[in-house]
Image 1 (cartoon, rainbow, N blue to C red):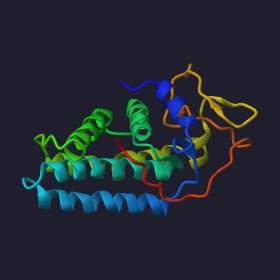
Image 2 (image 1 turned 30 degrees about the vertical axis):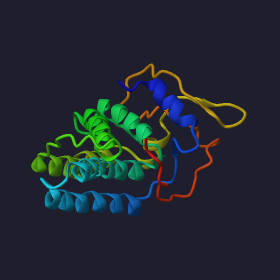
Image 3 (image 1 turned 90 degrees about the vertical axis):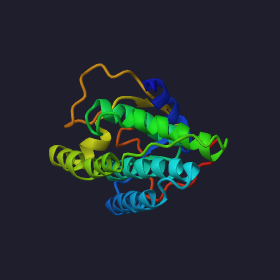
Length: 205
């Protein structure tokens, strides 16, 4: 199980969790990638467990990353993005089971793509479509109606030290959709907001 400590570790990594300007254009591009990947997934079903595992995982990952781009949160390490999934799911921003789904499908991708285990990949295409559309419409629209962008990114917990390094603390109060306490806080006056750009590829094991 991913813990809050893993989010703390991710916030300290160069390519881990950081705040950027929200970028609707990139969010739309990632949603488009997820939808395109759905089409590819349907075409290769039953033909290659390696590519099926890889395509299924990235379909899910693109949908989640589109939400992060909407919120102004960047993560170039897959495990850190999945750690965010755990947190966002618990707060009701992602469909129930998102963390488990991405965790298991990431491992399946590694097994089939890098270790050539050729494990069977079970795909429920309708549920996968629903997963992508739920993030794109219901959860995202509801979220954006309830909170301002500024609150979504900055109603958080923590403090920077003299070097700007984040120190994550346990959240003591309930987190609401209105405040979006993400546990990777950088106060606005201390935050160096980075220009939005697509995440750079990170080599996976």
